[in-house]
Amino acid sequence: MKSLREYVADAAKNGVAIGHFNASTVAMVRAIFHAAQKLSVPVIVGFSEGERDFFGVRQAVAYVKSLREEFDYPIFSNADHTYSFERVKEAVDARFDAVIFDGAELPFDENLKLTAASVAYAREHNAGMMVEGELGFIGKSSSVRAEIPKGVNISEEFFTKPEEAARFVKETGIDLFAPAVGNIHGMLANGHDPALNLKRMKEIHDAASVPLVLHGASGNSDSDLSAATKSGASIIHVSTELRTAYRTAIQLALQQNPDEVAPYKYLRSAVSAVEKVVREKLIIFNHLS
Ligand SMILES: [Zn+2]
Figure: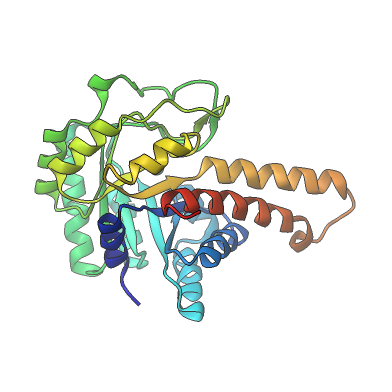
């Protein structure tokens, strides 16, 4: 089987994006896997620090790997938003397929230094692993919000600048770059996040010369996401929409069957609900119909 690096290169070449979906539970991983498998497209399961603490750091890697091996299927694990070098080391040692050092809230030089250290550690201890860096703050939690996250400014002068992106990529040696181009973590309660600045994204991609990762795609329009794959985004992250689908389905299942105590019964509809969202996104990201 090809490596994640090769799948990302293929996606970039073909103008499609690999879907990256976050999971907190085994049920969510299964939903993500089944959706991808039915469409025959590669997929990445993301685990934030909170998600991998709940799942088990090594268990998250092992679970995804067991699906990859049993079904000979391109499903990969990513240690999403890792805020300290210590936790990058933990993710590298646990043998995730990819890791993100998220220094977007740090001063430029400190972010650069810690991202470069993350790359160096990964190269030495887990050579095949992809390392992603971020420049430009887009908020933190994957939640439904009344307004734009605190500290995030979605006007153009606050977006990632192509020349800074180029310097950051060159000096850190990262494989993947996550810019801020109007995308936000979480999604607005009205279901419509602000439009992405795809012109800026293309300029960043041209300057940075590595595949881009679009974070915070929950709540963005289908047309923006489809166009993003043509502007340099080779991986697109969705989390909040899965979380809301999962929770709503469980709530409904318990309301309808208040006496049900078997998790594998009342979680079934949550798996279907998550699978449906993942399927819809994968169709857009891969230009399937
Ligand atoms: Zn993210």
